[in-house]
Image (cartoon, rainbow over all chains, first blue to last red; front, side, top):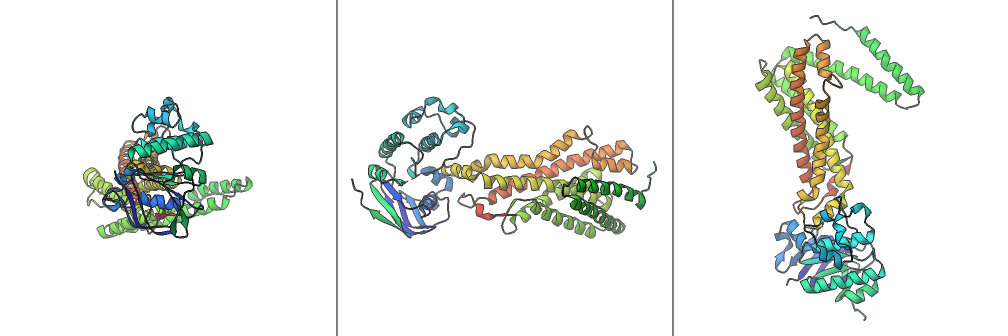
Length: 201
Length: 265
């Protein structure tokens, strides 16, 4: 059980952000485009130079090799990339249950990535990330390319997985209804700072 | 065997062929008549100058002057590598990487060939050392330039892929792996093709020149094989070194892809 702790993190427009995300907690982050949400996620994943420090449990970001840190604190970007011919090659091991849970046929491993729709890519990217067993998740608009039904399905699957594996999660979301459904806490970006918002049920 | 001396008016006849070609490109509106003429003029002037330099160098024949000539050739080759990059590393890194890898591979292969294979006396005898180094540098330069260009271009184009692999916890070597291999292949392909086609599709320029200048073909062939092998080694090791160092430079100590270190050339 590990919490994700940001201590005075500065990246891009955001300055001195301190925040602790508890195990199993989903913190939603929203704000206009260009306000620095994605940049902050990249800093937490150590893909950008940044000020301040980030910890997973008592493990300092800077004390771990960068690739080990990213395997633990995994960022799933809004637009996923695919570099092999088939879907299956992108997975470290076959994961039929996970594929079923995100609503994708079990033979998807054989599919050519060139034929994937944007919605399939998004669900497969989530499955790909979670089969690597991260200890924390950074989700950048994980349902942006999904229809209403699929969005709900993926939300429920993510919520269950996050609870089960006690993952601390920062979830960048735009839609108020989604934030109401999934967030334990909600922050918006206010200039260089985060501002907590009440979640109206 | 006699060498038939070439006089200037005979070269002038060859030049008239280039003029004819330039006239054709002008009428065909290819828009490159001027650059063709400039290039032809440069060939004539540059080669005449180098001929004079070589004559002087052969007359002196001291190690210092040979070394100085080698360094001058190396720096020019380094500049040429930069000129062929679509994206290059900031702060002179591309020049440094290109020049250093050419220095390591072309110079060591040249010295090795001179000392261990050809064995002139002294080992740095300019009529062997300078042409050999020139051939090696010219070809290594092509390999290094192609390799570096391919690497930086694909890093630039495939940023999403590389970063997504980093996000999944891959090391920078894995995240870049395919692109690094591609870049090394790009650098090595010309010499592999040249070796495969040598003697079948084309007679290599050096051998042709030697035969025209009166060498027995069997000897010219031996030298050509030697040159081909040394060029392959020089190009290969040079490309490996350049691509490996450049790849490392594209990432920082925290394995972040640092495209900000690239500048459009």
